[in-house]
Image (cartoon, rainbow, N blue to C red; front, top):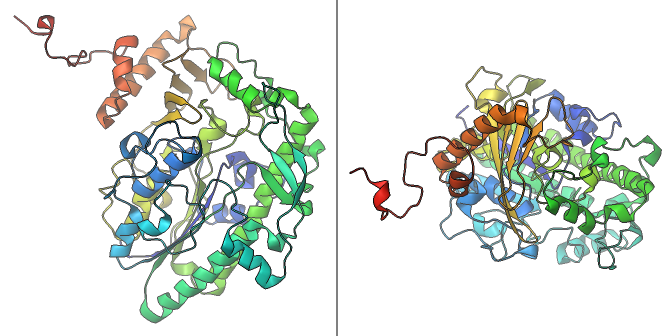
Length: 498
């Protein structure tokens, strides 16, 4: 697989795995993604390294975990962290450029404040921010050229904040045809770039990497009528974790529920929000189909690997929450992950724990570039080839805060999940008995052995990586023999053998 190949990287934002038919959804609204899964590899345990946009996207770009690249928060809610990657930071796009690739990115960037995708070698319009930039000159020109109406919304859905103010906008009805939506615009621009790159493939045998990054289905879900009303709320199955009481959980989760105004809206509104969210996924799937059709029309399908994933998930009412935040539930950490590589087996399903981070080394290997600089990434190509290969039987994720600093670390195994919260109670979930993560069994006596084993394993992984979060764990929990001076002083005579 060392021969250079073109790559189409399709990415969404804040996308639940269970909205895809390939992951069990029965609404039939993702035919194009389901076909990609049928003809490629579906990863059932695909996790984000951190459930927040900028750090996750920086990890994809660099192949490094957030604690290492140090871009730890979105700039819109930054609380003092770095806002751009360091000068000289490794990025896979630059490695591909050195291999002669065309590199393009259409859509959401969100990897810093001052440095754009162009600074990292990507062609394409600069579309900054976290939501559809509907006032962007290129989008306005797109509408004008086609005689399409401007952005206008109504039927806003929002709750009431604890201080009595209006809550964040969660959804609204868009008074534009599908052809005028920002999603249709992005797909059109991606097809135009694909056509330019296809000419270079034909004329110079120059491969390409083209990323199409949608801003949705991130809230607010703003959709034209046919997608706003596509799903009958009566057909929506509420998540079981809507029964969340937050008993035995960190208080920050209940606070976040109030921030996202869940209890100020009737349950019928929650059903409608979930229905509109699924409609948003359907609209994006339609646009993905347009791009995949263009790839086939241009004769690129037989030599182009296709990825689909997202930066992180979304709550949509699970645990009485919206958006994402300081709660390391499956809803926002487990995400969809699909890869199709020409010539590799179809319909493969893998259960290994893999990460968005692993895309980086996979892309580099496909391009014949050295993946060593992507130090926290591992190529997924052996799994795509359906090989039997050794793989870790657990995965570690991290979080550093959003509206405020809030450090967390998570270890997920086949059956259990451990979450360490220095400010509060730790969490342990038995996902076999409690897949909805409603009961925190961290303090249950019968879980003492599991708790100890997982704490020691998490500690060992963090120490091996150089993630300094382990220092807090050293003094607070049963982490086993540390084998070093945990005071870090080197001055205490009691640390020396006489």
